[in-house]
Length: 509
Image 1: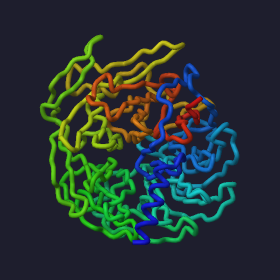
Image 2: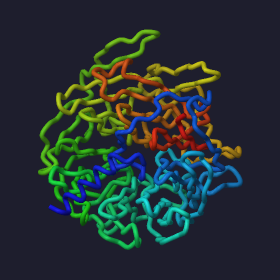
Image 3: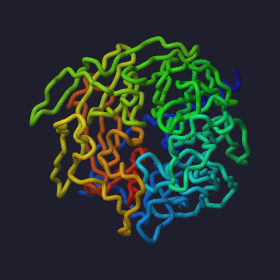
C-alpha cells in the first residue's frame, strides 16, 4: 500500500507539472493539463517567443525540464548526405533559447538521415530533474548531469522510433537487437530470427545505466509505447507485434507488460495486426485499432469487450469547393494500414487518428461507438499574412498517388546551410500515408496535430461534433516546403516547442 501511495503521488505530481521531461510529456502519454498558445505563425513571426537556427537536421521532440530544453540533431555534414551515425545533443535556456551546452554522441551503425520513419537523432531525451539521458539510435545511450558532465555511457542499439520514458527509477526504451544494413535500412528478412534477437522493451537504471530487466514477449520496431497505470496502481505498458519488416515477434497482436519487472501479464493474438500506434488505458480498458475496426480490451484480462467498425458507412465532414457537407463513405482496400502510422492518441473518451488513405482526421467515441471523420487541408501556405490551403482532389484512377503528391511544394529537405540531407524519398511527401507521423499531443482542451510538411492543426478535442467548428487553428512551422518536421509539439510554462529541419522554435509571448 505504501508503494502504491508513493507511485500515485508521483504520478499526480507529473500530471500537474509544468515541465515536459520526456518525449511523451509529464506522465508519458502526450498530455498536460496546462494550456498553451493555439495560434501562431513562424512565417509572420506571430506569437513566436524565440527561434534558433540549427546547423543540421534533427527529429527529436524537445524535452523541457528545470528551465532547460533538451533535443538532438545530426552531427553537421559538409556536403549533401543520405546517411549519418553521430548526433549532437543540445541544452538551451527555455526562456531565451540561449545555447548552454552541446555534446557529441558517436554512433556505430549509420541510418538514413531525415528518414520518414526515423533517424539517429529521433529518440527524445529523458530528464529526471538531476540527469538527462540521450539515445543515439545508431547504437549509444549517454547520461549527463544538467550541466553537461557525462555520467555514464553504453553501447546499446535502440529502434529509431523509440519513445523512452521513466518508470520506477528506470529508463525504459525499445531495444533493437539486430543492426541495420550498410544502407541504413531494416529489410524484410528477419522472419525467422531466434528469440534472443527479437526487438524488446528494455529497462536500465537512470543513475547507473545498468540493466534492470528485458521483456521476452517481443516488440515491433514501430510500436509507440506509452507508460500507463491500472486501477490497482500497477505501472504497465501495452506493446504490439506486427507491421512492416517481417517482424519475428509472434504471435502478432498486443501484450500488457508489468513495468516493475518486464513480465508479460497477458497476450491478445491479432492476426495481421499493425502495431505502429500509441495505446492508452482509460477506465481499465485499452483501446487499439486493428484493420478496419476499433477494439476496446479489458486491461485486466486481455479480452476484447467492444468492437467498432471504422471504415464502413462512416460519417465524413468534407470540404467541397467553399462549402462544408456531410457524406457517408466506405473505405475499401485499407487492409491493416488504416492509420497514418503513429498518428493516433486517446483524448478523454475520444480516440483520434489520421487516415492512411485520405486527409481525414478521425475519432472514435470509445463510450458510444460513434465514428466521425473531418477532412483537413493537406498543406498550408502562408505568405505575408495570406493563407492558402491545398485540399485533396481524388485521383482519376485508384492507382494514382494523389494523396502523396498534391501539395504547394514538396519538402525540399535542405538544411540551414544549404545541403540536401535525407535518405528516404518518402520524406518529401505530404506527411499523410506511408510515413511515421509525429504523435499528436494535448495541452488542456486542445489537440495539436503536426504533419511532416510543417502544418500543425489545433483541434478542440472535446468538441461535441468533429466538424469545421472543432478546428481552432491551422498553423505553420515555417515557409511552405522548408519546414519539414518529425517532432511532436511539446509544452512547458504556457509555451509550445517545435523542432524542424532548420530550427528549434518556442511558441508563446
